[in-house]
Length: 390
Ligand code: 0PR
View 1: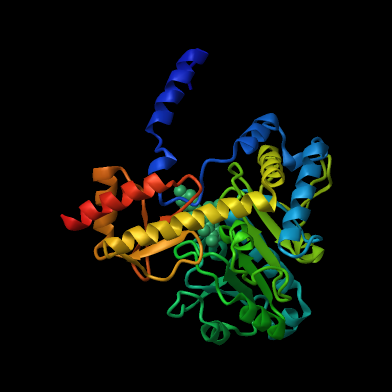
View 2: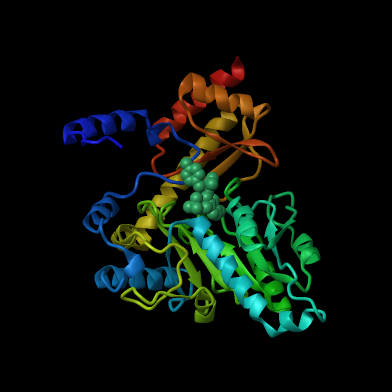
């Protein structure tokens, strides 16, 4: 740190220079984030100092959070679901599984299953092979064994594989409503039936799909309507058009949230259920603003435009003989392209396009976010053709 500070002008120049080095979303087809809605940005700035870590000081922001939770709970068919606003999908997933693990370790079933003298048996969690890498972090942090269930031909988790991995130390299941790589939705109803039958918890990772699925023409069962679903992660900072960091974690019952309780004797509130202490109230205000401004109708329009762009992209790609690995059901497209790693780096180097790749099966991955336009697609497909032809 310098002894004396730099002038505001100097700082602004440095920041402008750094901002100039950031990519503009107009060349980005790999991100699940996008430009936040302007009303979210304005609200974010208005509440910039608000700290939800000590919400007794910020009652107004706290009330906005309560309203967000009940309207998103309502969207997910449980208006009285309980939870809080997280920093995003990773924190929501960690906290959901931490709650499962805590309740499992406290349960009579587990205590009774310990053989004499035994103090601890490592619990396990069954997740689809397509689960986001945040679950590897979950496993490490929480000392939970991750059992990865295989996928079927459509890249949904195989229900048989899930069943075969469950044993007496399984704390629960994870299902994905909109997988990171393929935008696929697992057979969540069948998994919910298993969770009920085995009396285990079930978390739905709808970090991406939560703001897509309810607004598609086709309807999907993925939320609290299914009795086995005990928690859901849904991220306003992805398709919700809010500012970063905005995730939401919702539980069906209060005792799940309660299992995360920590005493906070010297704050204005005496308990906390969150992972982080200090927490952005700005992202809460931003989320409140955008979900109430857009309403279901606004999100339906946003999603329907992304889906129109997605089918336009597929038509254009078919003209150059490029096809998807699976028929996309949301705005995530994985393409069957030989040597896709080379294609990806050439697209970046020669044309400044950012795309990503999928692991298994290997493909070129595009996310058609609201910042994408028809012109962007025309120009991308024409550049892709040049790469493939030479
Ligand atoms: N669950 C799912 C299904 C996800 O797709 C993601 C992130 C997460 C959880 C974790 O969410 P947070 O990153 O909010 O903690 N999916 C994207 C990914 O990892 C996130 C992303 C966003 C990546 C923007 C790149 C990017 O430019 O691919």
